[in-house]
Image (cartoon, rainbow over all chains, first blue to last red; front, side):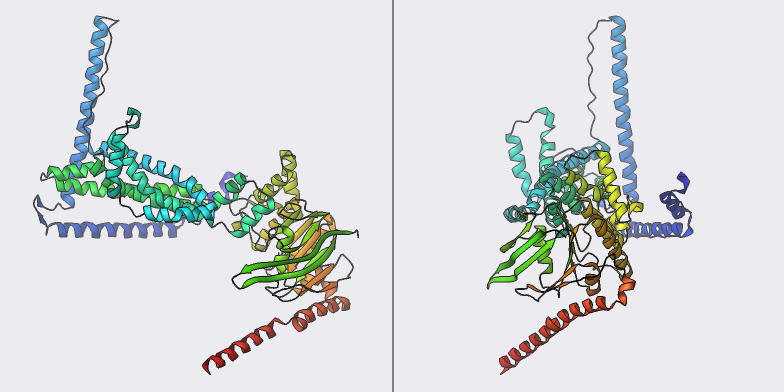
Length: 328
Length: 281
């Protein structure tokens, strides 16, 4: 078969060559842009009216300036790191030239946390917590969904734990974590506290949605499974799981959203070196730039949350058998 | 034809309710021979599907029992394949995979990969669906889905094919086409078929015997009509056939004279009216 005549390809070509497609794209991007413009205008107007103890509330221009400031700081830090390793290499080379059997000591560079390294920490923390929560919630949700008795047992507990604020969990988690002796493989204490809090809060939507998805497999398909006499494992793999995948992903997306929100609060209080700590430190710092920096952080938090959700959506599109089901 | 193959003896089912047991079905006695085509016809809610589900093993009879080849039916099994009313294909599997699942499950590891492939393709060929092996159920029409459902059931090499209003959701033309296919396949394989239908023409055209059920609760078999028309049958020739029309008339008169559902509703409405006037008085 001529690959150029493949139906999917020609459909794709049609889509991109038609003026209708481009007109639609143009309209969409114009609408998105106008929304952003309205927001920036409102921000500008509102900020000029607000006086705080740290001076005037920053507008978009000040935030943008602070953004480039943060980028500069990051680059400067990178340069210092590069210079440090260069110096170390030179030192080693000199030592080897003097005595080829010399014992070399390599020191790691102790980087000061920059805005961008803090973003990375936050992402690591949230993903660790989210993955752990999912690893618990999906299997447990499947078990609960398969048995109406188990559902009756667990449902009150889920309803009880679901609305608990991360701030309520945090002291308990902190106390428990500090009472347990952690090996260095686990990372720092503040990291573990943040991960555990994120996990405890993001467990519930996935758990509940998985259970509901599993319990709502159509009776017809259950009958098919019975007539075919599928074993428990094949029944689960062939009938139940594919049927529940849309609901599981709904749960996962809700959970990831919650995980990201919880993370910022947890980092503020646990002093995990991520975005939450950045905001808190700037707030405590109270310099004239602090408010602008917090504004930048708030926007970045929003953007990253949005990006995480899009990632989840892409994963869902890949995994889900029903390509028409997932749109937004 | 040979001796009894599938035997329903005093089959009944009742469901516990707050007001005591509700008897949905009772005293159903039916002996079906190998290769026979039997339809169950009756008004909605008369328990036709319940009979089929009991034979399939999806429901358990609370009285009496079902015997297939001298063995009691207690659970579902591949020797009693079911064609469901709304096809019930797994939407995440392709046409081929849907049938393959049934074949793999039934062969239990005894067939080689090539044998499985051949058998799946053979059965899809039988229902004229070889052109859509890699399509998902949502990419094919309702009639095609039902064909695949039939292929899946046939691929299990069942001794009895149980069909629950298999063509009920299809348009008239597609339905006629599939009925012809079914007659052709059944003549070829000599499978015993038990089919539920609402359609009088379908029942007369396809069946060797038509089992007419009385209205529930406590539904049972009202009459059994033996359709003695020669096979192969052609719908066009039969349309003017006096004996064909006679059979139709007998089924219609059972459904609309002896078991009128409309009258039932009328009398219920009258009862309601009466209780209302009593309450207001």
